[in-house]
Every structure is written in structure tokens, then in C-alpha cells.
Image (cartoon, rainbow, N blue to C red):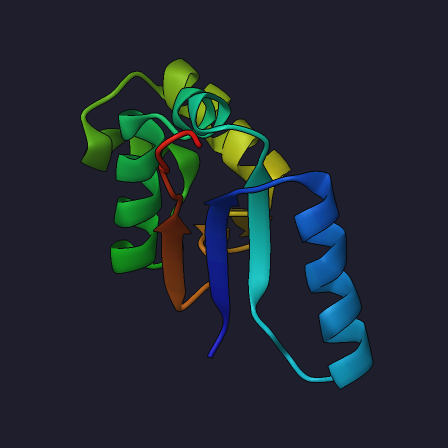
Length: 114
């Protein structure tokens, strides 16, 4: 099963996770890390989450079919899909667009300042 974790974290945390995975030589899942919650929310908008949901539940489909199912303009869906492809959350092959992950987890923490 392929899993991706979308999280907020520093570069140092990301490198530490990479090192742990490298040393264990075992699949630890995959990560998309943002430097701040603001960046995560600005990048993964509610419309992009909806596209991920449609692709994950509906299987492979064309860009036009995705736009039709989302009830959105093809041009805007195209822009959003390309951002999701850049992040590695969506892939494309000869059969269409798809989410390559069985599970997507999103996590972040908010802490009281010391």
C-alpha cells in the first residue's frame, strides 16, 4: 500500500526523515512537506482537495472528465491539476490522470508559544 503524508515541517525535519528511511532501507511512506501552515493551505486549496478526492475515488480519467465531474471550467482544473502533478500528488499516463496513493494523510501541529 502506498501512502503519502502531507505535513508542515522544517528542512531539518525532512532531512532527518530521509536519513531514517535511508538507514532502515524500508518503505516509510512518502512526504510532501510545506514550510508553514499558510503555505500548505494556499497550495492545497479546497478545490484541489476536491480534485484529489474525485481522482482517488473515480480512478483514472481525462482532464475533461475530471472537470465535468467537478463541475468546473477545464482551464481552471488544468491549472490545479498541474500544481498537483508538480507536488507529486497526481500522475498522468496514457489512460489519464490518477492519484498514485492508496492513502493521503494530512497533519500539522499548533503549539502555544513558550
